[in-house]
Image 1 (cartoon, rainbow, N blue to C red):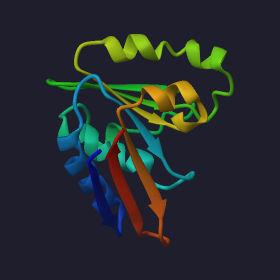
Image 2 (image 1 turned 90 degrees about the vertical axis):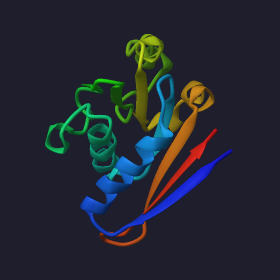
Image 3 (image 1 turned 180 degrees about the horizontal axis):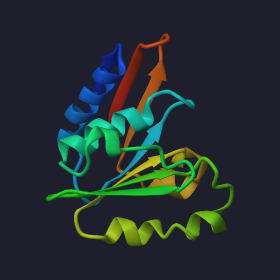
Length: 144
């Protein structure tokens, strides 16, 4: 199991941490994104998407209401998925995550995936964002 940790003090630094974390992500992975509401999960995805040339920072938004946002780059397709409003396995099945994951070059970044045992068991890595203060965050990456 390999691990990385970043400490950030602003949204810009969190975006930069996302860029750095992209070096450890690869197609076929499902990564759990954990953190409280407002911790900076979408801000981190802005940096990941930018590093993969899949989207500009300003084009990355929270998928809370759409559930899945797709960002296509030249090397990978990022699927930013938010399971906050998903309550049951049946609802989860309607998202067809297996189909998204099997798409060539796909990386799934799943917020609130820890709610479902299946997602916890199938993920390849986890990124945890912990609020330390108003602006400070500790971002931890580990392979599972």
